[in-house]
Length: 62
Image (cartoon, rainbow, N blue to C red; front, side, top):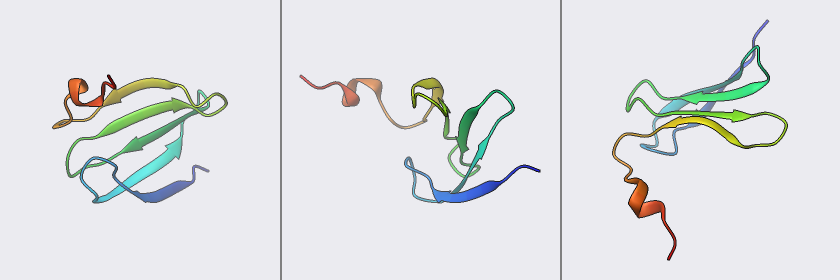
């Protein structure tokens, strides 16, 4: 049985889904804006990410 959590999308604020994959990853996805974030459940490191509308340059600190 797979547990799905309903969370707010960090990209657009709509309802998104978060669940644990077979490879011990946490996958958060939003059907409204196509946001995707896959992280390692043990370390929290990002495995894969896609966030339309968020420029990677705006995330740089400097």
